[in-house]
Image (cartoon, rainbow, N blue to C red; front, side, top):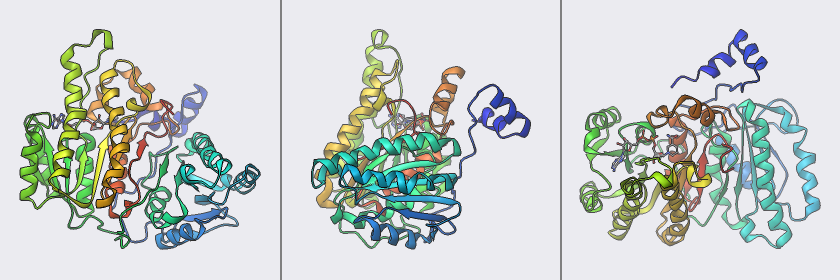
Length: 443
Ligand code: NAD
């Protein structure tokens, strides 16, 4: 859907009017629409400030990405702040001394990434408090630099897990985390899969995307296919025509199934077994049945729980139990910021989406031994057929109430899902990552 305010704000005359009226002035966001390349940070000027145990790993990741080192002067596409050496509250002066002046060098669509000790595994309470405090810092900076289309994020990593750092650094410093800002992710024990390809990363992988006929699901299927995956595109029988179009366009395989049907897990397992198993499962299909709780008919409640939650847990249980999801597999569940903040008229939807956050958190540890990761992605306001149906004024609020002052594109969600589905994401599990332009809701 066209963003008329953005068109107006970026027109010479319209821009003046927008300022005069005190309206938000969103700027066009940079997006990399090509497939992954071996050196995704080529031509990007990136500086590292701070020094701790993560320094060498950060340097290596940027070098491998092809970034140009630019510590001393000039405009910057990105800043990585290595906070892994901060242990005492007096060390926090470094945050001010090293970043305050240099942040002004950040270009539009620039990136700030802070790498810090994991608060759960710090040596002492003071260090843990500092590590946690950096989240407040990153979220505040995200709000300040968002008007430039820039993002700020945080990665927590322990000293013995530095090999997990490369993939998130390439993502957060490049042009694919366009609508991801104000996020903190925890890196964990990944599989021993260190030999990670840099392009066509999903060649030889079989991926399943539910709800693939349109919106975020269709875009995700296309993005995974772009990286070489063979994609099984699943949707309800009523969506047959659109599903066939999606699958044909990407050389995928359509599969018509209502995931809320009682035997959906068995039917799906049978289909996937014939393909030789599956490596990536994206639980994208989801529905809303909005009404205030007082006025909600019971079938609204049941339908949402059945599609958004019960079906996902039942399917995972069968695919994992029967080893149809192969070792080093990836599962991504689509949650929502409604599940984080709650939303008027969405008690059923918010419950189901919040439950997914708890679900990935609980299940992640059990899957470690097989190298399987599970994460949730929580979109904010994304321009899809689902959000096009929201009444105009509510839609405008939803779109603007974030640091980037605009809605995200399905591609932005697909990029995050693709990053989490890739072999390089072996150290990211049990996380919920929002792709919401740092929405104020639940922030
Ligand atoms: P959409 O309504 O455009 O597409 C959802 C797809 O899922 C449709 O093709 C639909 O036919 C399919 N589907 C629904 N029920 C199904 C079932 N029982 N079995 C199989 N397929 C089924 O939705 P979207 O906007 O692309 O959202 C995709 C996911 O992202 C959903 O889980 C949604 O809750 C979540 N999400 C979206 C937004 C947003 O702004 N669009 C925000 C937060 C979360």
